[in-house]
Structure formats: C-alpha cells, structure tokens
Length: 380
Image 1: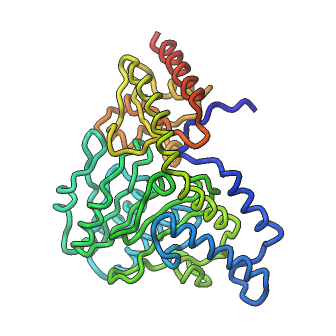
Image 2: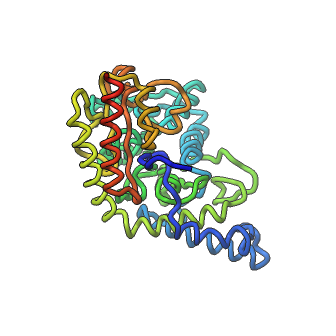
Image 3: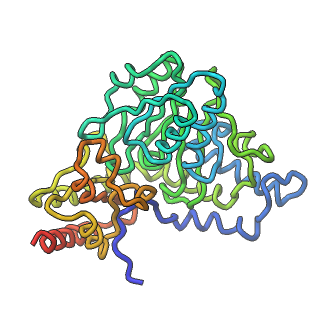
C-alpha cells in the first residue's frame, strides 16, 4: 500500500522498534499474570511491571509507587475526575477546567455536571491561552479540583502549569493535568501536581496502555476507584495487567528520557521550515501562538477553501488531521478553534501538522509543494 507521508504524530506514534523488541517475549515466553504470586511465571511478569513502573516514574520525576497503570489517558482521566467526584459525593462540589480541553476531560465534566457538580469552563484568548487571574477569580470555597492540560493537542500551546500548580497548592485544591501531549516530548515534573494522565502511544509506545500519576504523602485525598474487582494497582484500578503493553510503555519512557531534547530541537527546525513556507501563502494564518508551544506542532487556517475538500485533497499525499483524532469522528468544527474565536468555516479549513522522530526534511518539502498545489487547484 502506498501510504502518504505521516504528519499526524499528535494522533498517535509508531512503536519504536526497540519497544516492540522488548515487548515480544511477554506475549509468549514470559506470559505470566503479574498477580500470580506462587510461581516464576507470575514473579517474572511482576518484576517486569515494576521495572516499567520505575522507568515511567523517572520520565515525569515521580516515585514508582505513584504510577498507576491504566488502558490509556482516557481511562486515567475518568478515574481522576469521577473518582474525586464520588469521593465528595456528600458535599457541594465545584470544578474548574477550560473550554479547550480534550473531549476526554470535557465529557467527564459534562457527566458530573449533570449529576449535580458545578463546573466552570474557563475562556481562552485568540491564541488559546488562559488567564491566570480568571482562574483565581473562579476559585470558590467548595472548589475540589482544577483540571487543565499541559499542552494542547490541536495547537501545541503550553499552559503555565508551574504557576497553575502553585495556585492550586496555595488554595489546597487538587490539580489534575492531562499531560498526554507533553510527556515524552518536553521535560515535565510533578511538583505541586496531584494527578497527571498520559498515554504510551503518544511517545512511541504501544496503544492501549497509559498511566495516572497519583501524588502520595499529601493531605489532599486520592480518587476512589471506578473499576473494581480484585484490588490491582493498589486498589485504584482492578483488572489483569497488560504486561506486554506496560513493558512497552516502560521501554518507551526510558528511550524518550534520553532522546526527547535533541529530537525536539530537530523537529522545531523542520516545523519552522514548514510553517514559514505555508504562512507565506496568501490568506493563511497561524492558529495559536508562535511562543510557549510544542516544537513539533503547527495549526494553520487556509482561507478561501472548503474544509472537507481541503482535508481530503491534502491527505492524498500527506496524512494530517483537522484536530483531535477522538473528535474527528464527529462532523463538527474543532471546539478548540471555536473557543479561540475562529468561525466554523475557517475552523473546518484548518489543518494540524504534527511532526515526529521519523520526519525528514524531504517530507517537509514534499508537504509544502503538495499543499501549494492543492490550494491553487481549490481556489481556482
């Protein structure tokens, strides 16, 4: 099959070959259940899981015991949000989040809002940035959680997480961050953060495995489990562990810790090459800011064309998306771009280009040439 050039790394990444190599023995030779405590098959699986727990913890500056393995960030976010909501079920509850969060966050808050929680959805400016004063003004005596993503999946904008975490700590409020697009791409840490969700497949690990960081040794409470039935993962998430996936996540974390800085610099140069050339085309604009963002992402609006036709034509040679893969199943404009003030038509005619470790300069030049040709044809 003649695949297009892949520039949709924010949707998912291919498994690093070293990750696949590390996983393979745990499908057949070392197939034990990590919860089997009475024989070597289980012991070996458990040891592999604990090694991975340490590797993942090292990537985000946590302690191994603070890492809970899940099926991915969506489950991690469900556990964090619904688990805290259940914990405070007998109290008045208020939560603060943002209109540009991922649907895995927004849908959870809409769910608990329907069940009686009060939720404040912060606005953003035309660059996708939140206002910290607005955040502080929304804090109430019964605010239980602030939930704001580390980096936006559509625009690459990086929120001021360190300052947000300090605000949460000063008010003794739980701070949950969706760090899916940050972990393994930029340095992150857990200082003043209570809950952090992320997925392996965003940093060259396997799909179907992720983690929730749960801060220990702190007075603020931890979420109640939403999946029960065996007490796995310290009681936070029951179910037989996906040992091959967890091993792959650990190996991917180890590799990213050693390579993400140099790779980020390389991708920044390639992204700028792509962005500068595309923005030189008439009637194109950058969605977001060219500061405080991930180095491998650009989101560009193309005026004068119909969005669906543009995306179909570009994807004949370049695999890209108009936003989150999880939202693309719905025929709606991006809620992120809408919150930033873009019209529906321009939102549909916007494309997110996200680069990765296998992107080469010739891929970028081919992309520039192809997008130019597509625009010329559609505009004429």
